[in-house]
Amino acid sequence: MIFPVQVLGFARTAITRYNSEGSEESADYEIDQPDAQAAVTVYVFPAPADIASALASNLPRDQVADALYMIAEQLFGDEEEAIQALHPGAELLDEGDTTITEQGKQFPGNYAAYRYDENAFGKRQRVDSKLYLFPMVAGKWMVKFRITAADANGTAQAEKFIRTLPWTIHNLTTPPAP
Image (cartoon, rainbow, N blue to C red; front, side, top):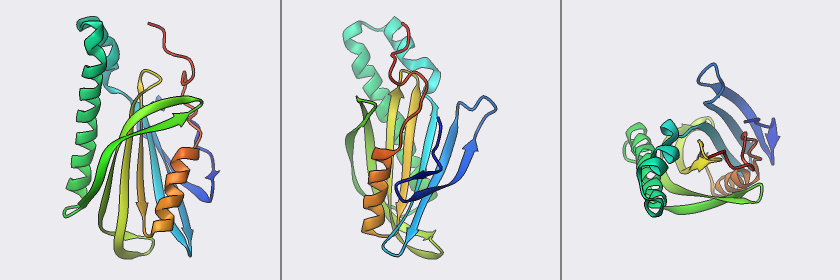
């Protein structure tokens, strides 16, 4: 994925490649203004071991969607556990299903909203944190967003950011070959 230098008022502060192929990467963005403080990390990584193909070859066609949904729920649950492990005492405020529209296509996902104390924007303070996970993007990718905001306007700006960031994932508009 190509991560722009700036999106809305957010400046890219880092790009991390987790392997030499560039198939697992993330980018950090931050907005630090008097009326909006927020950080967003965008992760793009392969879905586990071509799950869709394995399920399609082993299950009746009418059961594949349900099986994918259950796997996505488990992956999201793993992400939620990681947040709670890193931030003991984190308060779960809300969670549920969501969608995002990218290049004219809707992608289903999950979100969870938390509140906890964190060293953020130069001081220890109460922050709102959100997790978004969109599995099975273009048949093989997962896109995850982590938002940390010090104020309501920062949260609102971060929400706009994730809906504005262009996804430049290979094969996003072309479905993978069967």
